[in-house]
Each structure stands twice: as C-alpha cells, then as structure tokens.
Image (cartoon, rainbow, N blue to C red):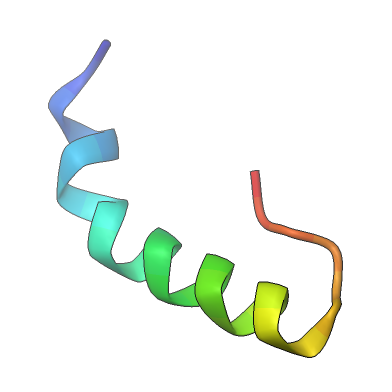
Length: 28
C-alpha cells in the first residue's frame, strides 16, 4: 500500500459521504 492513498483519504471520504447521501454511485 502506498502513502498516497492515505494522503488522499480525506477527499475520498468526503466524496464518498456526499455520494452516499445523494444515492449516487460511490467512488472507488
């Protein structure tokens, strides 16, 4: 696992939460 995923995690998590709330496909 690279550290890049950890650095990008906050942005990914924000997108995930927004998508979940909106009922849209979740980011991978």
